[in-house]
Image (cartoon, rainbow, N blue to C red):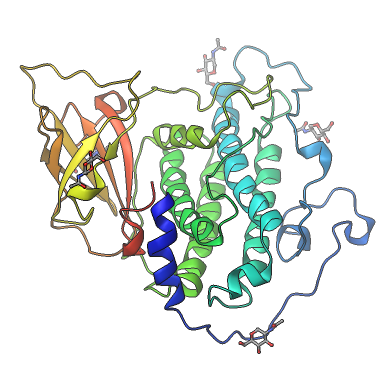
Length: 366
Ligand SMILES: *[C@@H]1O[C@H](CO)[C@@H](O)[C@H](O)[C@H]1NC(C)=O
Ligand SMILES: *[C@@H]1O[C@H](CO)[C@@H](O)[C@H](O)[C@H]1NC(C)=O
Ligand SMILES: *[C@@H]1O[C@H](CO)[C@@H](O)[C@H](O)[C@H]1NC(C)=O
Ligand SMILES: *[C@@H]1O[C@H](CO)[C@@H](O)[C@H](O)[C@H]1NC(C)=O
Ligand SMILES: *[C@@H]1O[C@H](CO)[C@@H](O)[C@H](O)[C@H]1NC(C)=O
């Protein structure tokens, strides 16, 4: 991540401050109207509140135990398991913005030539994410535990540029796992809520692409669909400070395939469509096993399609499909035992997210 500082700075420094429309939201006090239990969609605390203090009440900042007996079969009839996974992921996303609200000020961003609304937007996104926490908590029935937050380390080390680079990756990844979670949802109401939340994450990302990165904010006709959402959720475990999760929390994600993680050698590729790529498996304790008499594949996902390319098991090399749109959205890669990775258990390593936009970050963040 260290090299983001150099390249990211050049990029940001080249942006002239854009005129803002002056529609500043009024400061909203955290204890708005003395209301003790604000509801997302009915409170500025989850929309326009500006302040370093979290909009969340202390009682919502920890695991909330089940208060009704589960019976034998609770998660076969509701989406508690899905929402427990999603709430655990949301804690990692909300905390990123809460840490940003605490660490920075307006001047940290205007100093970089960015609009003077940048810090406000970070706080407002934090408000939205806090609203997601409350929505997901309320979506888990009283028969199941609502997981609490762990401690998270995003590696931005109080650096505003590194922070902004990580922001794009988090928003794009969350859109990718939200589409996949729809496959797991049992109730139509859950599916609708997941689409509505994904739309919100997409607005956050569009804001950053316009105001921070000064690039085309569109991702082509479709963002990337990847059906095995828990594999993407598992990537967020790398943000958790080891041993910091509440003891009550269920395993996250559940179920978890514990796949070998996938990375790539940055100095041998541009990371863009058509480029040669050499993969690595950085977790020495969790390596894929390749049978010498079998073929393996690199499967690349972009938009609603995937393209399978031969994978060299000796060199760990492949080629990113030339056909994919250039400079938009993301490309997701996995190593698979079958072309197209048609089932979850045919994925043997990954996923790896190759950020395509802003293009300058492709080789810098992961
Ligand atoms: C923010 O920037 C705009 C346009 O550059 C300017 O008109 C406005 O006064 C600035 N607001 C603050 C609070 O500095
Ligand atoms: C659990 O719920 C599912 C779906 O409603 C049902 O098909 C199944 O028979 C239930 N199992 C038990 C043990 O009650
Ligand atoms: C869950 O428990 C809360 C707090 O006791 C209660 O207000 C709510 O109505 C309960 N929800 C359901 C669906 O029973
Ligand atoms: C390329 O990266 C690899 C692994 O990170 C490193 O070992 C190697 O020295 C690098 N090669 C060059 C030419 O920078
Ligand atoms: C990849 O595409 C193929 C062909 O359209 C499809 O059969 C397969 O299910 C897709 N893989 C995934 C993981 O969606």
